[in-house]
Length: 441
Image 1 (tube, rainbow, N blue to C red):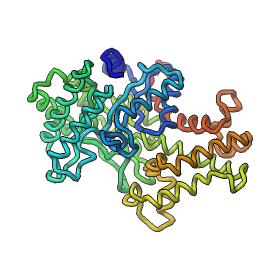
Image 2: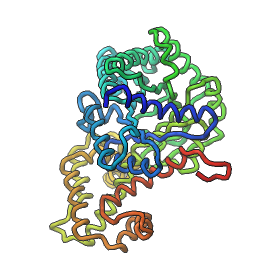
Image 3: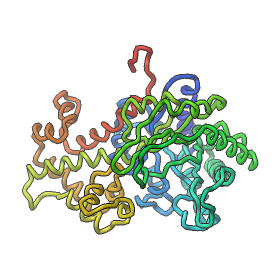
Image 4: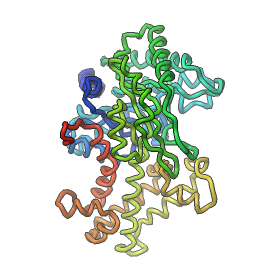
C-alpha cells in the first residue's frame, strides 16, 4: 500500500480527471467523506457499476493520529477501505484515498504552535499511510490567533504542512500527493446556524488566495509542487443546515468561474454539496467545481433505510426479539449529548426531531456506539431470518422495491440499505460523467 507504484497510479486518476476537465470535457469526481462501512460499501459498489474509480476521504474529525471520533488512525482507515474493496472484488488501484480538512482543526483550542505541531504529525500520518489527495486546511484560528486570519498566515501555515507532506512522501519512496488549498472553507459537516442564503466567494478573494499560496510555497522552495495543487476550495453558494438546503445558482458565480482561466492545472472543489438536486450537481461540474464533496447526505440516506427497516421489523418480529433500533439510538444520543447538544436548539420535541431527521445528521456520530451498532446488526439479522415480504418493501422503500421486481437487487436487509445509500450517490455519478451532444452518457 505504501509502495511508490500504487501511489503513482492513484494520483494519476485524479490528474487525468482534472486534465480532461481543463481540456474542456465537463467531467468531475465526487468525494465520499464518510467512515461508516456501509457507506463505504455503497461507494465502492457504485464505482464498480460505473466502471470507474472511487475517491474516499477521511476528515480530521473522523480519523487522526490519535483515532478521531471513529477510533481509527489513518493506516487503520486505509485498511478498512481496502478490506471492503477486497471483499467486493474491487481492485485496490481503483481506490483513491484522501484526507480532508487536514490542519489545526482538531486543536483550535490550543496555541497555534501546539496546534500546528499536531497538524504536522497528522499530515505525516496520512501521507505515510498512502493517502494521495491532501487538503491543506489552515483556515481556522487557534487560541492565540486574531479573529480573522490573513491569507498570508493561512498560506504560510499551509506551506509548512506541505513541506511535511513532501518529506513524508519521500520517506516512503512515493511521489508527492495531489493537494487542495483554500481559505473559503465551509465548516466540516454542514452549517451550525440557520441559513438564509449564501454569497459565492468573490473573484478577487479567490485570486488573492491563489497568489498567497503560490508565494508561500515558493518561499519554502516548493514552487515546483504547484502543478500538483489540483483544486481550490471556494464557496459556490451551496450549503445545508438542520432543516433546509441552499441550492446552487449558476448565474451567481459567473465572475468567480473566470478565476480559473489563468490556471492551467486548477479546478474548484465544492464542499457541503449534500442534498443538492441532480441538475444543480451537474451545473456545478460544468461550472468547474470538478470535485464534489458529500458526507452527511450519505449517512442521512443510510439512516432513512435503517429506520424504514426498523418500522418493518415492528410488523414482523415479536416485541421481545426486536432490535428497537430507533429507541436505542435515541437513548444513546441522550446519554452522550456531546455531538448534538450545542447544535440543536428548541423545545424537547424540536430537539428530538432534529436528533433523528436533521439534514446535518449529527446522528452519524453515534453509529459506532457499541449499543447502537449491536441494535443495527440485530435488526438486519432479524429481518433476514424472517424474510421481508415484498409489499412491506414497497411500503417503506419503494425505489428498492422496483429494483427487486426488475431483478436488479436482492431483498436481504443489508442490500436494501446499501442500495438506499447508492440512491444518494447516483446523482453524483451522473453529474461527474461526460455527456454526449445528444445528452446521453
